Length: 171
Length: 171
Length: 84
Length: 84
Image (tube, rainbow over all chains, first blue to last red; front, side):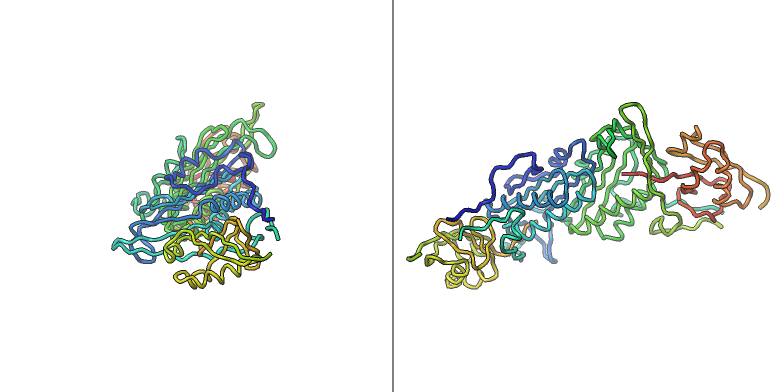
């Protein structure tokens, strides 16, 4: 009866270099070096980093929590949409979870493409979409020991927003 | 009578991390690591790389030539405009000259900012403007020993396009 | 399509703290939907209204209120997301 | 504002190949402008019309045709640029 579940195994040749949530330290430089073939004229790497203050308050650290299994699939969907829509060659995205101090890298998005405009477009798309759809939350922890979960965005509901391969569940 | 010449010495605190034309090998990873303070939540690095083909023709290498003295000044002007217009914290830009083989990095633009949107805006601005204004030329060299200078853009003329500090020449 | 069944519901972020648990068990009637799940959760002593402003994922896909929930589904309540 | 003077004109890219030189010397009348410089250069045996589609920089700034050129200026003819 029920089916669903986005396809698990995909070839490396679909342009998805990496799409994962991880507890490991992130380094955009590493991805930057790995991206790009001899036919790519543009590579962009975006790093999201933890700031030491937010909304006027000093932040000691940021704790990220995710629904890991779903998050990896959502990241992969977003990356595949971006590649399909913009025609870039390859994308890698990693989001970190756990407790991160100021200047730690929470997110890396790397894009390679023949030309720069689609590269910028794909990079911005991945970030916008993961902010809308990635099941991941952050709690700010302050110097005085208090903390609070940050307000987020309500994810879009329904298969039309869930990626390029909508799958109806068994009914 | 004549004066002109944009101010030479500027403090490092104006956000211009680097703005130069160089014969040295470029590495975006190096700039990526140097960019960003603890109040910056976004860092973007763009690498322009030499492609092994263009307009359907196989390219052996690309030779870049520049009016070095003017180019450094133009880069610095562009970077300062971008910082002023977008409010980002810091920008570094390097353009390489000489003969570059496929996959070599010809251009690095790095931007750090509190938030990502101005960072993208500044990054794109620097690239668009240097393509319009940087006195630099490229010649494609092909496998058969032939070569040709690539068509470029006519730079904007007059002080209004020449930066935020137009200087009238002596009259 | 008779009788009732239990599903485990994953909680995250704020919800996990409110409920003091990462998973709670919810009983639904056969033929129940996401809307039924929400109704049941809204009666939870500590979660309560927090569920209203949240999405529901079945088998790792966001699903609308009229989607059926069946035994064995991987069910999660997703508070507003805040990646980046 | 009488007499004539010489300026060195830097050439780049295609122009440098056409002229077979990185710098050429041009004689202008006192009070001469960028337009006068262009006119003189268009008479150059190998540069010729290539200068028409180019910009002129004085002291490292792009300048319009009515800007005066004076002795000691750093003068360059800038063919269409192609960075990136």
